[in-house]
Length: 248
Image (cartoon, rainbow, N blue to C red; front, side, top):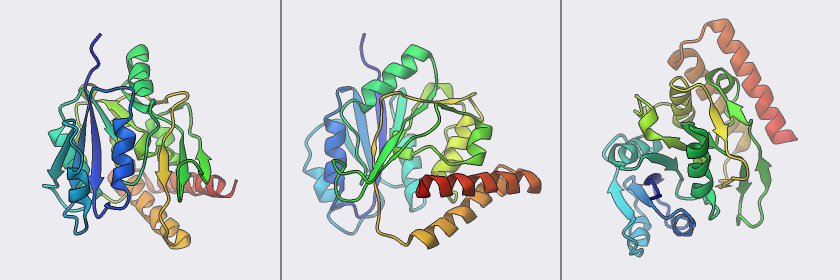
């Protein structure tokens, strides 16, 4: 049976130091029927020249034609995607070789529409990860309101099974997108044995976490329009989950 096309969405902004590794992690995939849509977000370094070093016809370089930032770039990629399936990988993250094969096989064997996986975080190299992040076996919309478990680099969805794939320009845009998708299907499912590698950036942890809580509150309260009491409950569970995630 012929492999169905997977569209891989990769936003890129000043990623010259890391994007080559990210692209190579796609090119080694055992599942070969993909298009890698790299959306340049007006980079001022050598990102574009690094991408142009590759001659594989499955790599398609686009310019972001929406609002600047990851949300606009992902929207550009989704709008230009031709695949039955959509996957996401940022230009500093990486996949193991079996990633796409495991997710496509799981979706087709189980007739589901939304998959994700556990993942590792690393600083210098994926061979020396700093932490393993495990997520629930299945996640509903209500579950996701309580904690943002899903890593963007782990997701693969069946494009044909969603009526609304619009990627909105919002704070915490990937989280808002998973909520949008989970309102259109009952659950997202973890693919056993699959994982990915998330590169940690050198930023202030405390200030970033405070900003993340503010963004989370905005999505829960104002985008998803939860009541004040429900929003307080959900943001409280999010904070507790975050503390456990980073302290344990």
